[in-house]
Length: 437
Image (cartoon, rainbow, N blue to C red):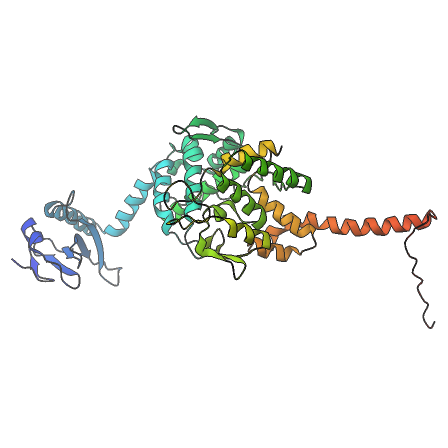
């Protein structure tokens, strides 16, 4: 039996099985229960529907009952359609009632369940400020905050019961270390989770974003995180001084002699001489290195596509890096086609020898910028090299501009003082001519 579109027949299992997909959606309307129907998509999906009219609605409204299969059989779908017809007789809009029930059900889920829903949806959410979804690395950071802080501290609470005080308390608890942990994650892995205001602010920002998503989806009426001010963590702008860089150079030479991973040492040198972020260097591929143009052409950095100008030392270092057949990365790892991992362990060994235990890999970026600014280059140009989109990001290095200015002040003050003291070798005295002379 072949059923044609819009034919009125009793919808049974036999009818549904007989329906074949066409080039467009095929609609079958039931001959017994008014408004009950079946849609067959070109892909072969069979979906039960209920269509109805209300005086206040200009056009017919249509509700999706469910896709054919467990739990929706033709008989169960018909019973659902009959319930909707009963609602209409009472003057109730079935679509509005269904929406309300869904919202009530969602409001009863836990924060942990909402987090799982958010993680599934976030790769497809377009961020208005940048016009694209979050990057995979940012989503991974969100997951870490969810698993390490949000779920342990507030995950069991029902989202319908969350108030602003809960969000404020969450931030304080993370800051005080209530979610801190130090545990093994495998044969060689270890997870060390710390507290602090900076960590708390980032975790709370993720929590607020999750609640904002819930509001848009209709799961929450308002975001309980609105009005909660994030803690301001201590800004760290550690940079290497020239004597420290000298010690680091000696430590890397010693490490090379002692057989420390040469690829890891090359990674550290590239971080120091390019000002790039760690992930940008570790994931760097040969096809992104433009030797003729003297730059890196990164297709997908933290700030989208980016061109990184390279100095001669960085280009020489890249040219000296060996290429591994079949591996596209400048810094290959042990696995086929993979890049170097475990740079932190290599750096840990080197920084101990260099007596730089408080220096992080990201501090190399600060050091690159500080040297550039101290050398007289403008904040604008240094920001362009680093790939900063906003000038205020580069302003943290403004302190370095005081070094060349201080040198000018030192020279001028020294010459004036020497002249006042009548010491030989004082600076040249310039006589200013009067007008008319």
